[in-house]
Structure formats: C-alpha cells, structure tokens
Image 1 (cartoon, each protein chain N blue to C red):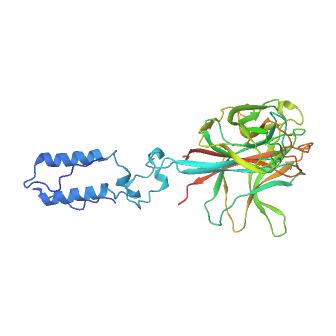
Image 2: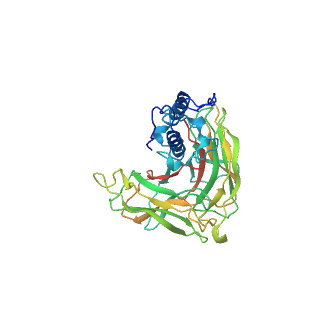
Length: 197
Length: 192
C-alpha cells in the first residue's frame, strides 16, 4: 500500500497531524506492502524467497543390456560453460526384465572423448542393483538416489572434452537382463538449480 | 524487526519522540520481512532478480533416414495462448556417426490433416554428426545450440519437437543397437 502525503503540516506543527502521518506510514510498512511499493527492476534476490529452486527430470531409456562398463543409453544435458550447475537429487529406475537379479548399473555424467570413448566425469549413483521382484526375469523398480546433492559441472570447453550427458553404464553384467526382444530399463534423474535470471 | 512506536505523541510534542519515530522508520528500510508484505501483494516477476524455470525435452532416435525424414519426435504439451517456451540450448549424443557427413535439424511442428509433417519453426538446422577423431562410425556428441532464444508458440493443435534428417550422409546408426538422443532446454517465466 503506497503512503501518500497530501497535506502539508501547519507552520506550528499540530500533534494530531504528526500522529496521522505516522499512522499512515506504519499502516503502509506493516503487512500492507504490495508490488507497486517495489521499484521496477528492484532485483529482489530469490534467496530471500521462501522457495527459489526449479526442478526437472531427465529420463534415460535403454532397451538392451550390455557387458560390464558398457554405456547402454545416454541423454544429453544441454548447457554452456559457466552455466550454473544442475544438482542431481533423486534417481529412480524401472525395468521389465531383471534377469538373474545380480546385474547392477551406474548412473554417470560424462562424454565421449575425441576418440569416441566414453569418459566419466561424475558418478551420480554406483552399483545400483537390479534385484528380482519375486523370481528370475521379473519386472521391478527401485530408487537409486534419494535426497542427494551430486553437482554436475558444466565445462567451459566445447564438446567432446566437456561432460554433457547422463548415461546408464553397466556395472555388474549379471545374466539374462533385458533378454527379451522387447523390454526396457528407464532411469529418471531429478535435477534442481535456482530459478534463472 | 520490532518497531518502537509510541501510539500518541505528547502534547506539546517533544523533539526526541519525533526523532525516535523517524529513526525507527528509517531503520525499517532494509529490514522488511515477509510479514510486512500483503498476502495478496502480487509482486511482479520483473521485480525479482530471477524468475525463469527450465525443462529438458529429449528426443530419441534409434534409426536414421533419408533427407527430410522425421526420425523421432517428442510432444510438448500446452494450450493455445500459453506463454511460449523459448529454446536456449541443444545437445546431442550418438553411438554411430557413420561417415561423418550426416546432418540433422531440430524442428517444431505437427502432422497435418493428411499425416504429413509440417514445420512451424526450425529450432536449429544442419547440425553436423561429425566423426570423433575423423574415424568413421565412432560415437560422438556435441552442442547444437548454445544460449539461443527460439520461441515455440503454441497453437490450436498439438505440436512436437522433432529430429529431421537434413543431409543423409552414410552408414549412420547402422548397427542393430545404437541411438541418437537430442536434448532441448526450454525456459519461460514461472507461471501464476
């Protein structure tokens, strides 16, 4: 609520005039501040808000399994060198065929290098187990990361040196994982960072 | 912040009372807290230092195609009249870059009533699927757009982001397994 001063004080200031003026100021400052009280382009820092984070989900879809260390699926995370880092907080997976239940995988952040070989910059979650639900080859799902804070750093250099994708990497191959002609392992990763200017 | 406010001035007014009141008011600036703001203040987003949200759309292809072929698409839900999303960054990763001569476009559009793809906006064009280290069929990755501002307007019908083959090149994604995945970062202001 803006405070308007529409009167001037008497030459000999009268007590009630001042009381009224102060009442107006107090009313305006306490509990009644509105958008128009802030200067245009005020630049109110978002850390002063009760909530200031945005989130998004990156999904990585694999339809075939592989040998240990194989990159079986990847999803790029676009951005520029110097961008604010995304932070991985949670990851979850769902799979139609867990094979013998001993397979595990990693969720990694990295890139193919100049020779076309995968290089991991950051491991988001490692040795995530693909256990059977009740028996071999069951579908199943699980959490791979919960309430984490894995920072994914954008590099100032251009690809392929800079990490740029989140990938599923086979850790322990197990046996018979995704052995059917159809089926999938999908991993979703929740990322968060502050709202952007 | 507590505010020492004497409800009523003395009569006659005492100098120190006035000075205290002005000092308290002056101190209030820089100490405004949540309770001071009206519950329906409606503070404009332009008055914040940051107000943009972002999301990532991924488009995954497991087969290549001839020039102009739409090889994968991902719908972007929304209603006609919604604030447009703006594309800022694109990145791709591919397990088999073939002979390194292939290129693709990222386009915004829809299938028309005849089932033919119609491009409304070309988001990025002729992105090269270069070989890593000039070796054929290598895996590779790169940026397709960096710090851009391509606006995607919603329409009365559904629209999608798609990968369209530009130059076909040769031997791209020829293995029975493999993928080309393109991610697109979109941003717009947080909505009411």
